[in-house]
Length: 319
Image 1 (tube, rainbow, N blue to C red):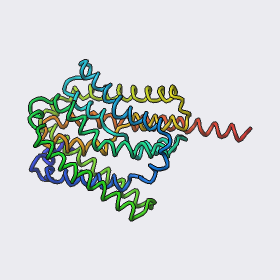
Image 2: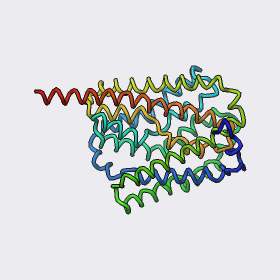
Image 3: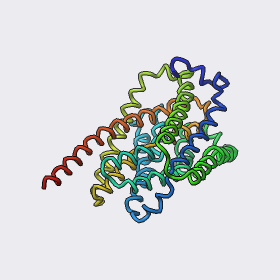
Image 4: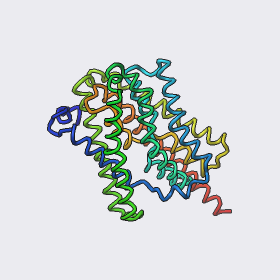
């Protein structure tokens, strides 16, 4: 849609994205609050080794690996900030929990780490951006990264992320933790719609600017997204085994550590860099590709592990 009608997402265009995207960001984090199972945090506190591994991989090891690729010049320059931004994001909530549970892993541990990761990401993502991505973006960002910029960003963080998130958590407590299937489906679809709108608005900036002229380099972003995903999947699975996690704990470590949240990344990117940022298209596309690939790989692995689990149960029943 952004390719065919980029004018719709242009500043002061028909959809008024400079206003509507801010409202959509607030709505996304309100929905995040409604979906964050904070009551599960108390249940999963004891397994500190697993939690430390997941958060360390998510916010330290993954960003440092991406930074190494960028500094070495392996990732092409136009895509470097986008891959750094991808690397610093928290894990997914719904897919990490669903994949872990469906494959026979510890769903409480997955819920704990997904919730904690998304709460830590509210502070970790802006800090990583300030130290690594903003300086890389050159003079324009460096000038914007003054005290005025950070005070403005903190105000946006408070009103567009923290406040809606807290309101969502309060409403979750009032409405109860158990939701009916139609309500869950409605909230999920509403959240997907919000994410799609932000993706559309961000892509419009790219297609109005340099996006259409750089179509051949999209493949570079797709290839590097696949490389990072394979690296993250293999390393988290291998480290889980080396640390002695049994299968039930190894699965949440695997899914929570290697996945990155599109639902947090797109609104956070729009908030940090601004809808008018000339490179917003290049900042968001690596995340889009990585998210698409992680869903595909996760579904393939889930199908295989479910088959293995069924075969194990059949063998035990026969015995």
